[in-house]
Length: 187
Ligand SMILES: [Zn+2]
Picture 1 (cartoon, rainbow, N blue to C red):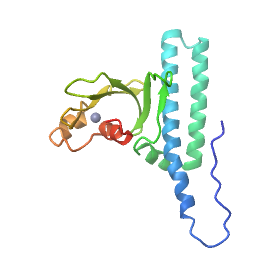
Picture 2 (picture 1 turned 90 degrees about the vertical axis):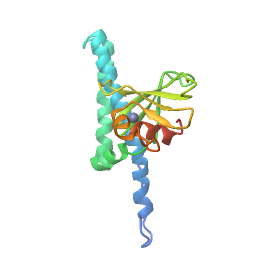
Picture 3 (picture 1 turned 90 degrees about the horizontal axis):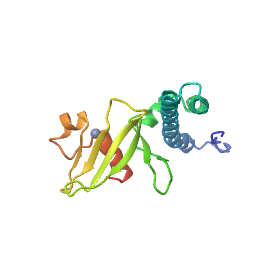
């Protein structure tokens, strides 16, 4: 599907065109994050299919084409916005989410956190932690999964190294996982 193209309005006077410059940058955040997630999911799908079914199975070919499409879309985004804009966009708080599975009961919600795709699963609440999320990297990585939660006393906690070693004593600060959940209003 072709990407939407933003056409600047015809220049009829000498007014600065600041608004025209900002609009694509804002849109770039959403497009970059969506493109990153689609690319990462396609890589994970192909790796899983090759692992379970073999590289020459029809399903593996299907996912290989999907990955090629995702890479082409990413290359078009890079040509349109430039790599620096895309990398900055990936560092922004989550601007868009993708759901896997049925939308009524999604298996997971995907978001981009600090340039990486994560699958978010809401965990059963406990008395001490009414809101708990498991965050798993896509494709799967040795980095995680992490568990970020809001405790019953209102404080927040994560089991990532950054939180444990640098934030634990300053509970008013978020690690990137807590910051993303907070930005989404899910914490
Ligand atoms: Zn964390």
